[in-house]
Image (cartoon, rainbow, N blue to C red; front, side, top):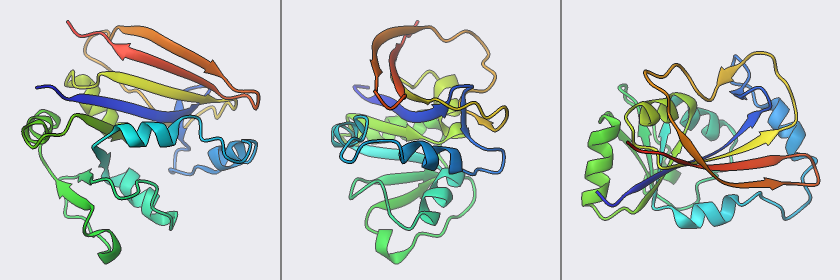
Length: 182
């Protein structure tokens, strides 16, 4: 399988991707400090991927924003339950209840080269299956104290190789790692 699965996400300094109820007000506040035209590499990252894979909760949260941030790239929503797809997204959004391995095998066979894995539980499932190749985390300078963590329990240590660190004048720090495979 010649497929890369990548994570590109923001967390609070203490490792949370959202408040306990899924609220992102802290991230919205931080984004207001970002100079116009700066996206911390998001657009370049999106241009490098073929398919986005998101969990149901992440999908529903993104739908609530009104603006669809995935563009015209295919998006697969992982959920064991049926999901509703608005007509305006029917050409790009689909649903799957496959395991991470089954989905990666299928997408590789269909010619995909790089996947964007998004959403806490989805990232955790792909990591525990040994399917994540690289992780880029943009650390936002705020401590939430509690919330939805990016990482959950793991059965064994997951070793990472540092690739890059980028510091932004407005306080964000972006860390990029390659996941070491045994």
